[in-house]
Length: 281
Ligand code: NAP
Image (cartoon, rainbow, N blue to C red; front, side):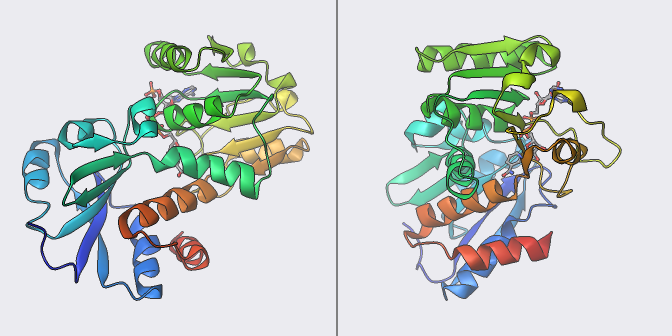
């Protein structure tokens, strides 16, 4: 039995999870909409996961975000998955209800919403490059594949991860042209329309720019999933070369808004959540 809905608890499950901006964003939203709820950090080591999931209801927990390293591991604890969570093979949002535990992936829709609505980029028919084939890349690659690009070129230093992602995209999107590249040079960045960094390279200020400045051009949109720092060396270089740029803060905002909607059934307060994120950064 679920307890009294007053004072519902939500939170982000990860290990480690201390630096997450999600509590600031969701607590501001709950406060702004006068919803009696609290969003917490759940830093749970792998050996504590069974107990954590077994005691969700007892602890009045009605929803979770899930982050590194549990986006795939949590699937074993869930009763139902959304279609996109199945395609991506990872979950970043869990809804706890009387029907059970349902998993969603709002990273994919958050990215696509930011890209298409705020940045006004339509992926249909475009040449797209993604660097990185980890968890975030899987989500954005599925959302882009659904939007029918002309070509999707992907590179990762981890060849196994790269080929697994390419195989799963080929299996699910039969008409998609996908090229797993063996080097950055093979990505054909000079004639691409959208270049995405889905690696952690750029999070440290000393990190190198992954792409040679000469490959950047006007007419290119460079999207870095990193939002802290606000401008990575990749984005700085791209801007100097006349390309349009975006960091990943919009994706973070929209994935959070989608999670909020899934948990509460209410329209999320965009401005409040955006301001809270910017203040927390
Ligand atoms: P991940 O699962 O660790 O994937 C990153 C991938 O990049 C790994 O396969 C890694 O390979 C590869 N890589 C590392 N250095 C590389 C290089 N120089 N060239 C090519 N590939 C390289 O991480 P993730 O969860 O996908 O996150 C990736 C980035 O996206 C992080 O910076 C994260 O903060 C950001 N992110 C942002 C949002 C948002 O809302 N804006 C959401 C999710 C993630 P190895 O494992 O072999 O190093």
